[in-house]
Length: 91
Image (cartoon, rainbow, N blue to C red):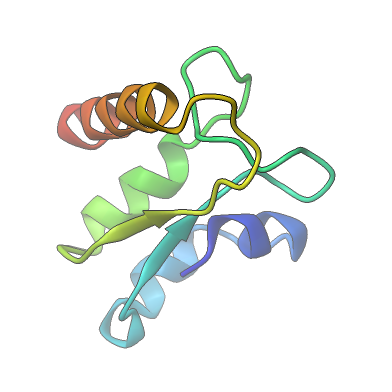
């Protein structure tokens, strides 16, 4: 269940619910055309619908982040982790 590919294919997030029994892995990174940074509150990308559907589907697995463009791995990854956790817990 890859956020980036779902966005690029215009695949509705409702399919996460539809195929919930087949999801073995969830993956998040920026849409095509945007540098792959760690998701941040100020990046202007809305991950909430994707994360909400994962929650509604009962997904309890790992959410991986593909980030290859960063200046400070420790700081940026920690901030991203807190941001994503907050969104998941508020859903």
